[in-house]
Length: 253
Image (cartoon, rainbow, N blue to C red):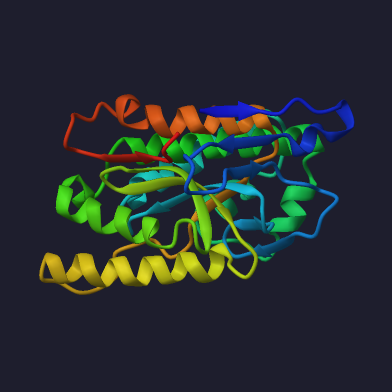
């Protein structure tokens, strides 16, 4: 059961989701990002916002999931949008390929509404491209998908709380909330290293398996939480996957 606590308008940023898990465990409360509380922003090719005790939507993808022609198509779509709106087209390549030293300058040419629309468009193209199943799509193999899923589940209820996850052929989506003392930067890298070793050993090869920088998004509202829950659940259907070509898990209700 997912239960929404109704709070006063001033508290709506902190609306709570509680998953009841029976008599043996305490309920897990998934919270929205609180801009008044401490948070951390780091930057690689992507910006990464992190807050202990705030739910996150995370995507890990395989190293071959977005080949050069797909990245170029993503870039061209962004360039078209930027040119149409008379904005610096250089922001497209800085977003999809190598981050430019002038990235912040390009981004600052957009007003708040344009930034929102640009990010929304870029994220939509990114996730659509993943669902086209480029690359070897090795995670279609159940035994390899289980390595990825079981590794994420290993520290559930310890370092973090998982709401749900889906292992797709070339990527993994999860909704997760980190506990005090843990972070995506540390746990995520550990998870990718471990699963890469295990998967490579299973298929008798070596080398890079995951793209090193995950996509992550701090969930800003209860409505967004519910939308992303549906997105994770519906992702295999939207990607036209058959039973046995993906793994899905959600917290017991």
